[in-house]
Length: 67
Ligand SMILES: [Zn+2]
Image (cartoon, rainbow, N blue to C red; front, side, top):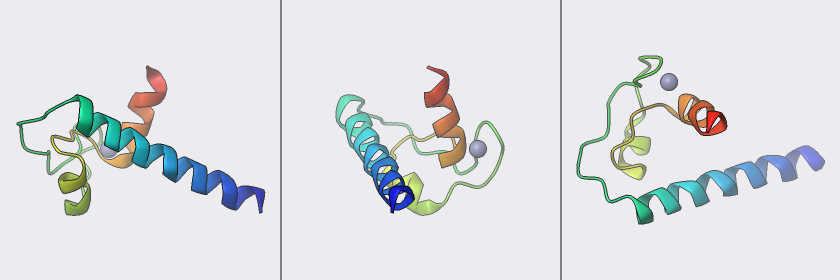
């Protein structure tokens, strides 16, 4: 039960961050098709959801943890 709640919170946080990024950072450049950090292909759904994204979800999380 606790694990399920944690996952739900993580997802909510993620979507909130995506919404904030889209709101505060107008991006004109296209999303990367491949992650800048690990060269993995980025799913089209993420490319569209996160305009101008540079990394896959995993690397994005790592970047945000480093801040
Ligand atoms: Zn990556």
